[in-house]
Image 1 (cartoon, one colour):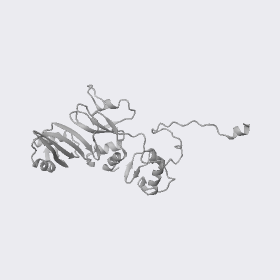
Image 2 (image 1 turned 120 degrees about the vertical axis):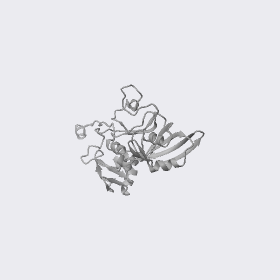
Image 3 (image 1 turned 135 degrees about the vertical axis):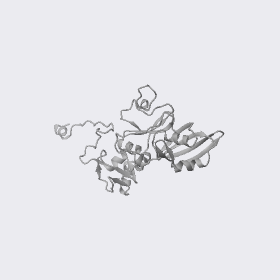
Image 4 (image 1 turned 180 degrees about the vertical axis):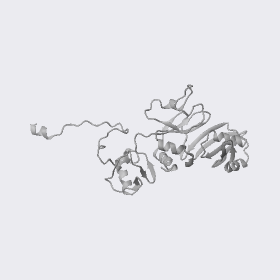
Length: 272
């Protein structure tokens, strides 16, 4: 090979780090105007690159509130807000959204000075700065969300957004018909009036009944206090959903990642 051939070739470049977290650099990410929109959507798991291009061409993608149809649009995933078909898409790779089926006896804290089982015990090997969204008392089991998205968590916990939560409660039977009417109309508790958005008896077996309770209240022990007020102390309580995110058949003590529709539904619920 001649010396001219050697000199015409550019030196071999090292592949940049591609860990996928904020602050890392991937091939093609160092363009001054950002990353191509279809690539951002593909990387977020919304669709393949080709399918993402079709979504853009069909006018189904918006960036910062404006519909985008051109293929060459570049964006910065760390600063823009992207919606597909009206649902917000999480494109920041440093954000995590998890669902926990909290078992009875576990405390809704990230650490416990008394050495009791707590939510933090489940994420000791994770590097993200995760925290729980709201609480479930130690005797209540079921769905608890964990995230490091502070904006979303704040709104989900704020009472003004009225995000609904659904519970299954085991109580003493029989359940009088006027219990539902009373709870929906509202009762006076020691810290003010409270009511439910929905109440129904799912089944009654012997001396026990299983009821479904839907409310957007977030006060401490609110479900138990409401049921105490109407003469049906809760014997077992499980939170089965937060907004459109459902517990399903998730194993107690297990964590799972929320999917894109679930995350989008939470954003919609709080106006983000």
